[in-house]
Amino acid sequence: MTARLQLALDDLSHQDVLTLIGRVREHIDIAEIGTPLLMRYGMSIVRAVKQAFPDLDVLCDAKIMDAAQYEADLAFAAGADYVTILAVTDDLSVAECVRAARARGRKVVADMICVPDLAARGRALEDMGVDVIAVHTGVDQQARGRTPLDDLRVLAASVRRVPLAVAGGIGRASAPDYLALGPAILIVGGGVTRAADPVAEVRALREAIDGAAR
Image (cartoon, rainbow, N blue to C red; front, side):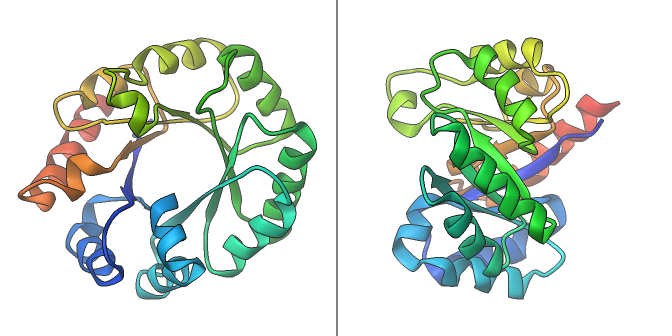
């Protein structure tokens, strides 16, 4: 299976988001509207990206913790194809988020940041019907040298039915290490958005993905 490439957009302006997606559209599969963008622009940025690129999957990184059906509906109404819920929330919130997604034919991504028992929670989330389980090492953890590679190994060995995504400081140099573990979605952010040549970086990542699938 060929992994999908997700571009996480966090700290750009509204116009720069649209410009960058336009430049790399042929190489990416999912545009992630990151939490900082949501805090800055609200759901208008989700709506703008989906309207500008209707054939591109859009993920709204809402990191839902409560009022899950209501918040998920806000994202889906704005055009999001995926919405994230934090896996550390309660099972009722996960169930409500999944219900909202099913009603609209959309998808739920469970973000595993700060989950203490990855294997057990991953199996439980499978049973609850989430569509994707995302390994995620946050920026503050990355600053101390942590990567998501070991967490991906744990989940790859314990989650069997639900596709895995992985995020956390991944770039062209480290991508092959992650792709060797077979994630369904490879998520890259600053390695592209802060690059001198973002198009070249995305193209290199796409080549790594295609090479791993052979």
